[in-house]
Length: 198
Image (tube, rainbow, N blue to C red):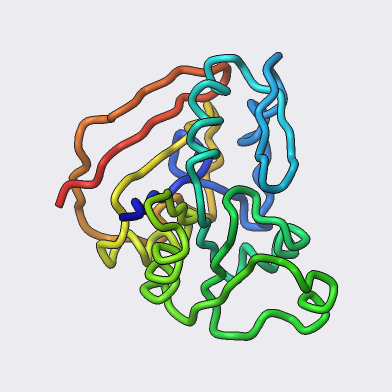
């Protein structure tokens, strides 16, 4: 059965983006090392520390289906039809994907769902026994608040952004996580992985 993880690079104060959706120095660690890290599905490559590569590469390789919201789809132009990770991708949206985008990317392995519950269910079906990755922010908050998330993975950058998009969106209430399963210190990033208590 598929596992569902909410994941993102996050500032020390819990933010994943500025008000204009840029990430400032949050992603600097993707380019400050001597070891190649590959998002094989998209073909993107990065240069990170050996420690970060040893942690992130197996995680990215395990992702079978990412689930993103419509805002992230629009902001990234659907990564031009190539999932950043995984074999297929689910977009949670109340509107159809743009006709022009679909015409330019007829073979994009993208699916849509009209709710986070339907999106996660579809992603789990597509992933089989693989990993489903849910983007942090508002969609991640919806999945987390609905009890659909099994794990939390954070790449904590030593940055204080101070505003806008939070990792857990506007989630309210206390949720206890187990002790970290993994804590890995990279260069300018701390990789944390938790299991959600049930």
